Length: 488
Image (cartoon, rainbow, N blue to C red; front, side, top):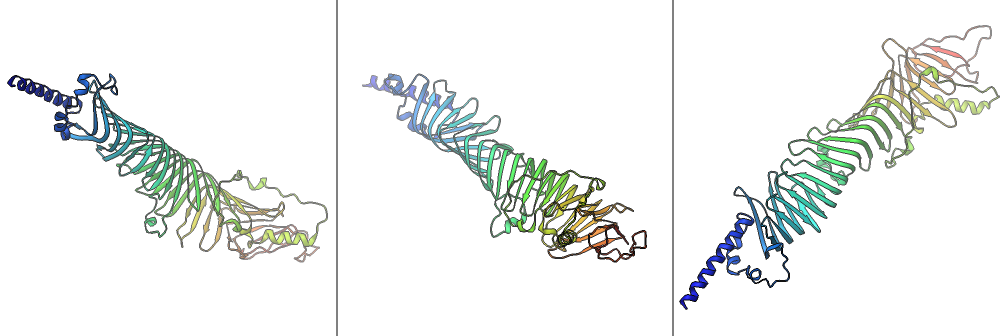
């Protein structure tokens, strides 16, 4: 009996050494919580007798219902619960099945995960999870087909049908790469819907402002940076659509910059420009480059925004705009109606208007809507039939509250100019036009020009060889005889 006890005691000591050695080799010291049960249950007995058909030659240890912990310099870096763990014979890696309560402790806070399967490589300090996986931290909560986590490069890569929460919205993407140390991230292609951190006033809205984002690639530079970058992007809400090859948003200053050729669509106007900068705190937009603005007629301004082909428009010099009059007899009543329509500012909002400039700066705050249009702006408005109006200026001011547009000449010049398809011309130091509906108001300073008409509404002295010149304040421009020059 004493001899048998000695053998049993010796076997137990060998088994304890093997168990402790295995625990140290695998994770140093990642099996503390169950080491007692590990030793007393003798989990190696199946391997010693070579009776298990479920174990292949690559498996060194199989355990069921296990919590794994991995340490680096005495600090817990990762852990996970698993229904089953197969530790490889080389003790360098392990396969986990039914993974839950996975945890990675990074410099930027913990990352939680779960997966059908996971592969831990202890030497490379990597985790690869497959099957239906979920991964989350303070910035996102996602599901996907698989992910990999590399502790050495600090990179988390989530792949395949990535869906879930990202920041304050719902995201769908094919891939996501996240730096666990800096918080920098990139994803794409991305479809995102939610509440962007674009404006302080959005925080107090009864109904949160919802934005939709489509982007070939999304990139944020990390928690130490306020910059977010979207490439091949389109941002939209119920009021507007903004698309550009690149959109950059500064969360701190709340400035959004779209570049590379932008397109902007809304109910009131569609715009193309080389660059657009939106200062949301100031409620100000600056459009630069070749700026084309298509102002829609009033009947369409409440329609939802839609992407549509914008008219191509290139600046044209006034002398190149030529009026051709027909020699055939005209219906005088119909002609009078055309003349009245062309010369009236009441109908400015009834027809579309195309404006081109090199820069447009617009303030859109309620009660302070106004714009500065610079870089030799000009505009053309098509009316019924082939009738048109065309204006030029050195720069212009638009007052959205008073609903007026002021065309201003270059210094000491009269290059603020209005022409129409009848052949009327009006040039002045400045020209002020009302844009209010049914408000027929035009005011010009030091004006001169030509007014054509088929109606002899102004009596003429047939004995005079030259048309009279009228002098006055330069306010208004009534109809005169064909070829009559007005001045002031």
